[in-house]
Image: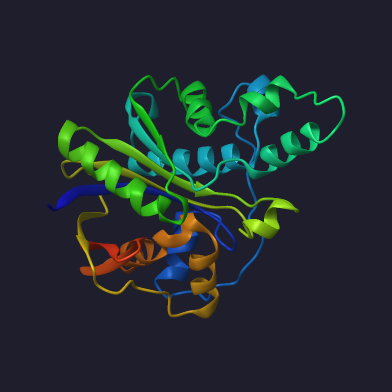
Length: 265
């Protein structure tokens, strides 16, 4: 079965990428990729009290979600959403583990509230007033592809616009030794069942057993393989090229996703 949707706004933030235009210049080959630590903006769309409680994954997810909806000209309060992450807030998990290792075992209520996997989706709802359905999923290293499939399925079934937010952040030591994600990276896509004025391209996805596409730049390939959310880089590259083409994304062992891209202009 083929699942399709139109891509409106895109949001990107990660090592060496400050936003989608910046990433587009690099992924299209117009600029060289220069790795640099991810700079996460303060989530100004949150009330001050909630803003002080946010961790890195929330800052990342809100930044790319806001960029995608703004570039797509969509009202975020009216959108359903899919949030996909391989691990959630590693720093918050680290702090909870440290607290549990103490004799008192006292955990901050704020730490506990931020430990749930849907914390980014919750803060997005608080920030935007979004009341539509929000699905949050995790599929380890396959989380980007799983999120894309879920989002495209919802667009096909509900025939309504939807926001896909895929994001991951690093764990501090000693957890980092077991899950060596080096930095934060995320990509968000505004998806619609029909072409909109801001639509960049139409994408169509099917399952395949073809070999996955990799990045020709060794530094970008290292980024793709080291952060689960960055498994979507080949799709972002195809969108940045602004020409018709296909790309195969990593999914499960022996199963991948073939995505066809047809630009709208």
